[in-house]
Length: 258
Image (cartoon, rainbow, N blue to C red; front, side, top):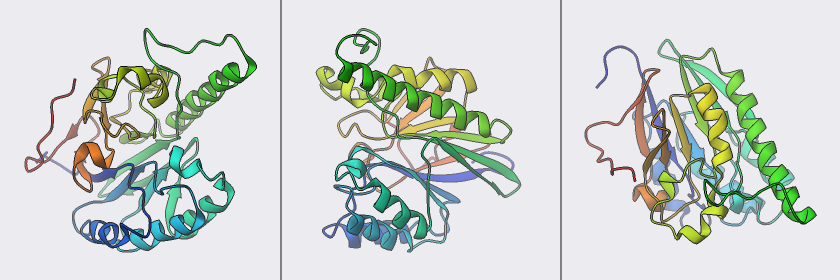
């Protein structure tokens, strides 16, 4: 345990709540009571982005009184019903961040979360350039918009004692190890690392890469965790934050980042 006040964070991504796993998700949220101060969801709350699935996520979320903060993932956009599922989530007590920030004070420590979905585009050696067909250049611009949104949201929480960046797509290659390299371009973008390097949050979280690796970093300066449930092999990953580095409780085994 760290000395002094700390914030207990429970994080997960790619929960894909639907009628088949609702009971398990309800149980997972209920078990957070007394163990976490805030819950962060790194996208893919639903299976296909249907409002009924968002309702089921809300049903599970209501098993805890702990604040729940989330970003959307590609699955949440699949049905193209964004304007329907976001109001359902927000009405159900889920703080959905789309290039925005959320903050609170817990045990005398101010916590700020900067959240956006992120997008694809690749990393060193496989960057998608701003060149070619209009459709490809539109993709490049969309990623750029997500980068700008993350930068702005991080700026909003600059004064918080603990700062977390929350997204769905990966900002680094490290946490994609285990996935076929041929699909890295579709799993994230190194451009998302730029605002992380600039603002240096205490922690960055993402999901999306189900066969990836738990732990990595941006240039060894910002810890990055892939909290997709298939990667963690448990419902939530727990962090204790005091404003510098995340401390993973001793009862949780951390896999070596690659």
